[in-house]
Length: 234
Ligand SMILES: [Zn+2]
Image 1 (cartoon, helix red, strand yellow):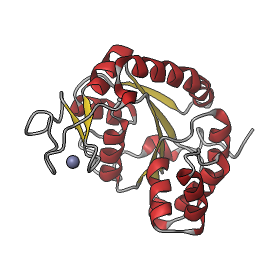
Image 2 (image 1 turned 90 degrees about the vertical axis):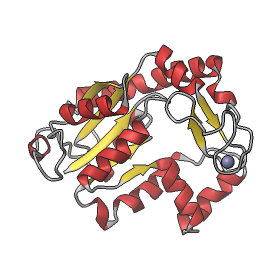
Image 3 (image 1 turned 60 degrees about the vertical axis):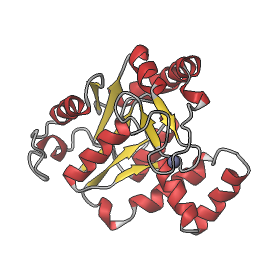
Image 4 (image 1 turned 30 degrees about the vertical axis):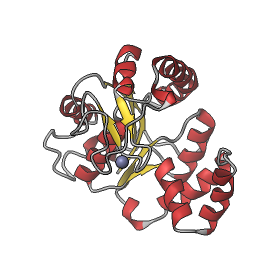
């Protein structure tokens, strides 16, 4: 089984890595943000409940996020596992997740603040179609303009250096107990997320004990033992 959780600061590129790993292993890439958005778009009963909070500009309560996650993890395409990105955010959520689905590995993406600041500082978004660009890695064809609609690109207030530093510090403080939680349970691997996506991906597969060519189903031995499994909340 490949029930994998990704942790990392904003700008660590874990979304990209999660999508690629999930594709290679033929398992779904789940992020709670996407799950919420699709539950709302599909107007499922849980989605309708979540929508009220989103419309009011409030955080969707933990219990509701967990219910949406539970529903998603119950679908058949998670039979071989999943890559979960953006959840859990604290040990309480980790306990609840463990009760839903025992996690096999947790990957922590490690990145210094200077690199996060540089990466996020290069991010530009289109106010019209919400497309995201990066001056370093994915610049628009015409400087400052959206490729799709020509709108002037903007920097999100969140991506300005002082906001990035604050977000990064908060991330560290909030995540430290979670890192400890998974380290104590022998589930944690940490990888250096500084470098081109290709290099980081190679580190990721190596850390997971997977062949670098990532033939799905190969070398799954690290997951097959029961030693790292937990039977439920302590
Ligand atoms: Zn646009």
